[in-house]
Amino acid sequence: MIADRRAFILQNTRLQSPPHTPEIALHLADEVTPLWRLTEEALGELGLPPPFWAFAWAGGQALARYVLDHPDVVTGRRVLDFATGSGLVAIAAMKAGAGSARACDIDGFCAAAVALNAEANAVQVSFTCADLLDRDPPADAEVILAGDICYERPLAERVEAWLREAKARGAEVLIGDPGRTYLPHPRLRRLADYRVQTTRELEDQEVKRTAVYALA
Image (cartoon, rainbow, N blue to C red; front, side):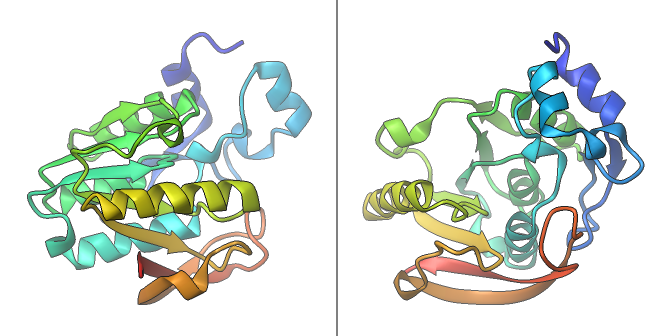
């Protein structure tokens, strides 16, 4: 088991900028860091869940880019970054002038990753590892940002229902997605399109056509 998650992240990642958000630096794994090549069996022996926090996924990069380019979406507002991973989108929101940003993810390693990445970008981001889908959407979230949430049908359906409840309560909801199978296209309004550089280690293409949507 990994006792010091912060030290583990520092030892197995390097500080670098995702291709689509050069303004932001994150502790990420890549071909030159050991974490990149760990097998599922090796991760299990370490007691480490799949390290989604160690990569800048296409949906998150597109959503972060949109927020940076359209700061009016978040300026002065309370933002929730749902399924945050590395904290990229929450950090982008703070750089764009959000009043506050809270990152949430059920993977406890994300707490350390988000803290390190927020420090690297000189912003403050709070964190919760509570499963927010088990409760009503937070009343204080004025904007909810969600990247790459539609890769499994049950989860996608559950998240969409929760996000629609949040919208009904007054929150603005934006989703970043690179064409995942279970994205509910008919119920979304497309806001922007991007071509996000990625890697075949993570995706089926080196450049993913990725879009940002609002709930219709």
